[in-house]
Length: 159
Length: 159
Length: 159
View 1 (cartoon, chains in turn brown, orange, purple):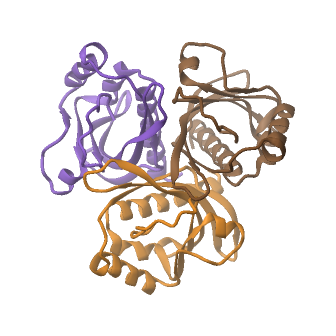
View 2: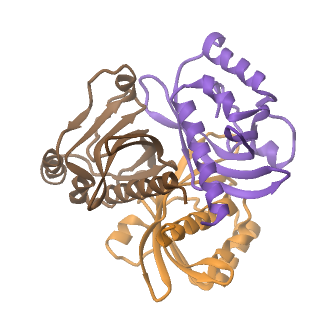
């Protein structure tokens, strides 16, 4: 089997496991998908396309992610909602350099608030740098570049 | 090739064929995706997470499914609509026990009513027990666990 | 590895690359996904199911597609929007005849207008005839059969 395809399938698995962890609210598992100095950003496409640095969320280590999870689950007052990630197959491999695999995938996240119908919440593109570790593939960096310029007033949980 | 990956791909194919049958309204084909004593349930996540048994629909054999199809196509008065299933790759393998493969996949179903725009209809997760038979993979059990607590007044066709 | 699966994976890659080109607004790349005499149509499911020929858009060569791209990017006055394609895995192989592979895949396209939330835009099914060329897989024909009968007043970009 073509090695490139095999790698794509592995990345699809990584993406599926990541999505399942978030949608099942296993938030403590979330930082473990990243390297210890991994980077997680959520940025409007508008800014990304113009190479502007402004991001809605920018976390630069697992520690910051754990902090964020603590905030989400323990301290932030917010209306609860469920998320549901649906990803487009298949991760596209964009290149590889110095052991870092660059890949991207389209995502749609649906939100369901208690007593309400499900709705489109956030759609966009994951732009990733992925590294192979003894514990499997990990994100050195995951940028969630979302299409809607409208700043969401309730982007609580990770995308 | 890794056997686990191969199995995942087969399950993806099963899921794609299942979705196509429903969206193309080949409802008579639907029960054939299950074992003769296969189980099909549609349940709110709220109940599933709390391990409450209440389900919107619970069918416990191919016979009951055929009955349901007869109802849908011949007797139930309802406003017609199209469905469109979009599934997230890839089926996650959760384990295997006694020849039963446990897997899950995220789904989004869109609904289109005549003269109307398409809308988000039902999003959630398939939780499956799959068995290999001489006729290919079949569902011993498929639970559709949907995110919206709101009981839909028109869940006519299978999810 | 099963050759059929390998082909499916290749088609998934083709679909992912096609979707990325459109969503990243690389419209000039779009005609290159087709054969020189390739066919692209966008048709309501209503007409498709009844075998009626009426289509919203019907382009019968790469030249017509280039023309369309010129129109979209240079001359048509329209409100801009982003698109985001999310496809369901996996391409279903429907058959092969005389070197033409017939396949289909479900799609959901989300639209985001400036300053607005993302919304469901167009959902349906790609019905494809695919040919292997020295430059990789190409569409001999791609029909986008969409579920909503409502004619969209702003179907500007390709689906």
